[in-house]
Image (cartoon, rainbow, N blue to C red; front, side, top):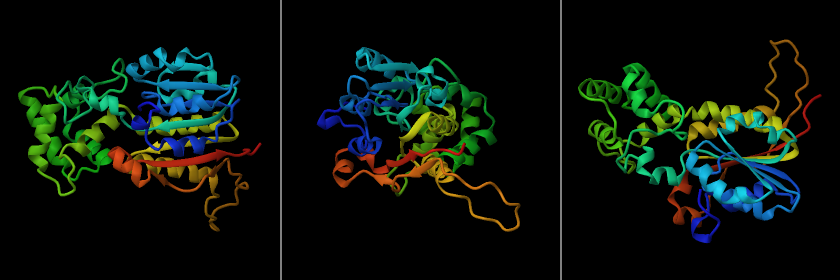
Length: 311
């Protein structure tokens, strides 16, 4: 998500590199390469024996990596979701650090043809991997009203989810929704102007994108895969941008760092042995970064360290 030049630093760049505690001879994985801002920072700190593994399911991001960092012999590249990181042979020897920078990247939002932005009219796609899965247009053309409303409420916390779903079903009976501009206008006509300054379609577009890309399911699988591959002392760093993601990350870390509360009514269970240690709490971008990059305002970084698991 950007380069490491001062004006294009990725979100929470310094905090992420500090959190990973990069060792020159270590092995690190960036599961969301984007445009390589964080990855470049990691590579700059690696020695000749270090290793950097890069993943992304976006072909545009993979093309950038292939023409750039992947030319370095210390770098390996894999096109796919970080949900599958444990299945990548390159991770089998263990990792000293794993980074996930969640959500949609700035280049994806900036490219109208990708269909992520309600502010730029383009094909209603929203797939991070446009070569697989169902586009937003295809899903909205077949899903029933209840399913659409459920997605808008569950992943976008959109209070008018039922009214929006009803309007989408009514509109598609006349003509399919195929453009981001059409969908944004339809939602804006129902929601109207919001007091918080957000575009009326913000929550709905977020919800549809999360659903189309299975983002929360991938996050859960990716977290489990990361812990299975982290060496003792290795670090997991995750940047999230909304409460649903952050809740999953927080609960995942806590479940492996803290013993569950005792219940006298339940039979005794084996002694809890933590497999993670939370490194501090939620970290946020400082005032200088949020002024320079408004997207950083919603960013939350959580960090955990791998402990010796029970035999």
